[in-house]
Image (cartoon, rainbow, N blue to C red; front, side, top):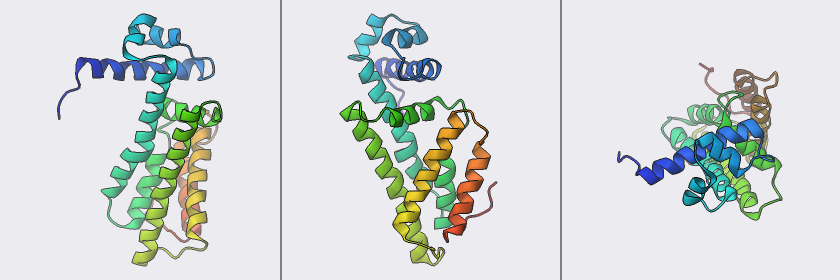
Amino acid sequence: MARPSRQQQRRIEVIDAALEAAAEHGLRNLSLTDVANQAGVTRGALLYYYEDLDAILVEAHAAGMRRVGEDRAALVAQRSGAAEKLAAAIDAGLPEGPDDALMRLLYEFDVLAGKSPLHDELVQRLYREQLDLYRGILREGVEAGDFSLTGPLEDIAMNLVALEDAYGLHIVAGGSITVADAGRAIRLYAAQAGAPLPDAP
């Protein structure tokens, strides 16, 4: 795999700094100066790579979308059978823990939806990708005879996305719900909905 150019590497470092600064200050209070300080550079240096703070945040948002969308879909595609795919989708859709800065930022974008047409479109696109992933897995399971759904496929897919988002928000908020708790609860719902999964590792 080719190594990123110096400019590409610097842009990656800026995004990482933005994620860390957003985790510390919150998206509402984040400033270009916060990102520059976190990156150890001047505001002017940041503006060499990005037009403004919003441009940085759009790329950070896109990075989060790739993780929950494209990267997760690729991971799921490597599994055999709908049950294994559903288990992988559930596990990969949750934050790694309370300190998962990228997932925390995604949830903050959801909360701030309505303030930026571009971010609104990214939020809606990510939801559609989540929904399509679960729809596809459930459909595959039904067609293979592995799943006997207890309700409409569309509703079950929507509920899986809603549970993923709700539990994920509690995880990054540092509440009493752990990643293991959330994964177990979503797996229980899937089984009750007629899509039983392998035992969690």
